Structure formats: structure tokens, C-alpha cells
Image (cartoon, rainbow, N blue to C red; front, top):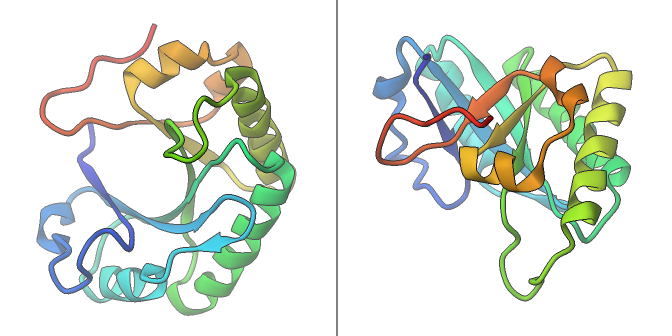
Length: 164
């Protein structure tokens, strides 16, 4: 298992734990939904480059309230902008429950958005990891075609148990 962190505007830029990823990786949230952009992304990524992070990436927070292809298009455009400064970035999509005011959300719609997102990113020639908690992977019943995607298991307090 390779240790890594994820950062977003929810994390203080100056307090980001870059020392903890000297032999791991860091992904920074750059977009969410069809039009959202993380306001701290550029600064987090610049600090990651400055800290010499060995593997730096960008992730998208997937939402079920807009088509997956539209989300992927916005994500890839933002990644392209940021790569002008950072150099190549690995890509990932964050798969988790939607916050209020959106619940209850339809699992089938969310799964369709995820597959459309991954298909569009793949057709653009990019590999995209799926960032997901094991319980969420089981709840979504991820389809077999996702086995080609790298899996980034989320965990916060203990060693993660891989999904079935």
C-alpha cells in the first residue's frame, strides 16, 4: 500500500502535510460537479511541486446532479490549465455520498455519471483512478469494467479493507 493524501479548499494551504508524502502521493481537488472549481487547487499544487511531492495529481468530486461527460469535460479543461504550471498530473475521480440539499440521490444515476465520466476521460487518453471508500464501492456495486481503473481506497483511521 502506498500512503497518500487528498487536499481541497477544506484544508488550510499553509498547514498541508507535505512532509507526510515524501514517499507517497497527493491528489488535489480541482473541480466538483459540472462547473465548480476548488479555489485552493492552484496554490495546493504549487506547494506540492515546491515540496518535491513524488506523485502529484488532480481529482474531481463527482456529483449525480449533472451528466458525467459534462463533469469530465470541465475537469480535463481545468487539469490542462494547471498542467501548464505543474507539469503532468495524475487524474482521479472522488466517489462518495452527495451532501444536502441533494439526498436522497439515485444510485443508478450516480453510477451512470461515474461511467460516463470515466469513459470521457479514457477517450481523452487519460488514466483515471477511482477514489472511493470500500463501503461505497460495495454500495455502488461497481461494474466489472472498472477493474481497469486504478483504485484509491479512502480511509481515515485504520487500514482499509478492499471491496469485494
